[in-house]
Image (cartoon, rainbow, N blue to C red; front, side, top):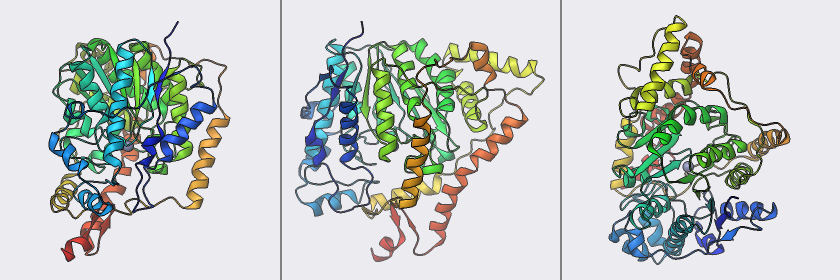
Length: 488
Ligand SMILES: [Zn+2]
């Protein structure tokens, strides 16, 4: 019999709320709506509630210097908070935020501890503020302290977990977690994230496929990858490496902003909610009852509530709606999988074998062997330079970053999500692909290459927005505003 499900939720975390800008997407209701849905569906009835607890300085310093704790604790007025945020990329705070962030860290640590001490099986910490972008003395991207990185460090340093896997499936790169965890050989760190060849934040080369050490990046260069495409990347790259690494437990940075019709609409990703349940199920197969999810992003309520609900069903070993794996992965994802295989074959024998098998298939079909691009494509250099300059000079925008969706857009996103929910099929099982079918998913033929080019055109949208900013004297690009420079 599987162990009891554990969760954290505490209304004190709703006190972290932006008091000077109505446009922010990271709102208190995010945690509350998820909690209420899980409660109303009965998913918390027989669960173990872990009490939220303030993290100690010793715990926070597993990932951050003491100086940043003191600086955050010293912010007493709203003006001081906003001033502090002018040198951070997409951050807002209020005078209670540092205290709430401590609660989020303490909760993440305690739910991981409860699992290691066998008081609970799988669990979900519905905490705010999120954490995965925060590193060193740099809170950013709605994140204050890095909940997941601290909990991961606590697991290996204090709880004696020998091999730990951290899976960050939020649509944004787990850049903060990576910076904290990348050199720790006890930890296998995985981040699947939007990249657009660097045209997407954080505009850094290092978040491409060719990451070294015990780290795996699955960068997406196309929009609207489906749950089937996502799971293909996990099946081809992440899970084989994980099986070779043999983690004792998995901690997830559970962000749902890669969900179908989250606030980026068609420019975003296309994981329908059951995809999150199936992804968790695969991780649970790897480490039964040793999977802890910690809440990160996800901003369109209908998406993140449904996604968190399905993920929790997965954590609780409940039935999930059927999903259909694609016979062929889309061209853009196919290129990413091949690039990851080509790169990780150097370190992981299982991947070297998979690559050989896939290349053999190319040969048998009379196709050329896959070869990565001779020069790595990267579009983000000037983005990063400009942002760094504005950040270091403390003139980043602290308000009105991302336009709120219009009423029409909200109606459309709700309609799109409701449409797939109506189609849920709980009665026929999801058919897993055989080893042969899996390798057939990534045949690299002319049609796939053409599809790859077409799908990757989305990166031009982000690139062009940037070029418009550079060319316009009064240019504005969500965190950067040329007017700020002129008046400085
Ligand atoms: Zn995110």
